[in-house]
Image (tube, rainbow, N blue to C red; front, top):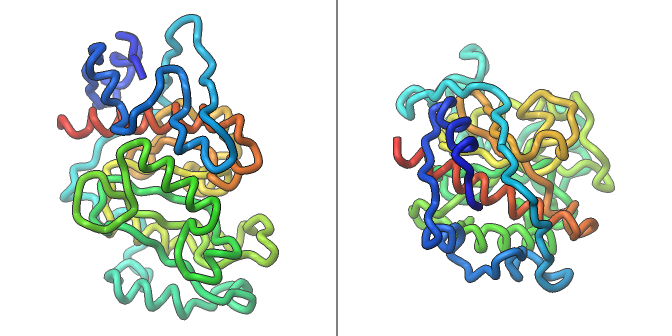
Amino acid sequence: MVWSERQVAMLAEMGIHLRLPTAESVQQVAPAEVVAGTVPADIAAPTGPATPVARLAAPVAVPVAAPIAWVPDAARSTTLIDPASPVAAMGWDTLADAVAGCRACELCVSRRNTVFGAGNRQARWMLIGEAPGENEDRTGQPFVGEAGQLLDNMLRAAGLTRADGGGEDQVYIANVLKCRPPRNRNPEPHEVERCEPYLQRQVELVRPRLIVALGRFAVQSILRSAEPIGRLRGKVHQYHGVPVVVTYHPGYLLRNPVDKSRVWEDLCLAREVMEGLASR
């Protein structure tokens, strides 16, 4: 992604400083070998070949949704949950046990397994999805099956991985809901509310430098917005001082592969934001 001086200036206003890329650095936006003007082939898989990206006649500014008051790493461990909540003091193991035994809503009746999360628990990147599906309910792992394969392809193309090995290219993945809604129906507001403290505590424990929200219900939960993703993507939002980039859910892309080019643009935006934060 080539940034105009105006885009760089807008991000600088919120404390994110980017370098204008040279022709050489543009080729290094993603480690995968990417043909200019196309979505990487592994993102296009398994539904088809690389999809052309629409060319823009002029640079389009990436607007900032709201000024981000950056919270230093050392101060971002206990800022989301009411201190009186029992979840607020939980470590990873206790939190995972609480999720596994949770009966706060009716989803506990129909679930086979809770889906806690996966990846590097100290990752700089955190991906937040919507709710487990059938494969996730069966395995207890987030983003498996065809949608999970597509997500792995997306991460790989952006130089990222969910594998837990301690590197800076790793991510942590969690969902807004920890239990599968029956027949993959949409989450109910009260279900999201009951599950929210678990996600908040995960964010506190991971302390990510950047969040990527995947799908409508993840975006609505994190940003408290009813706006469609199409109106929110391409902007840098915030969640308690952490920059947030929103994009479409991999499951949605399986049904609407034409939007894969937009997701690639969103991943490039997230990469640029992270590179700016790395220089701080």
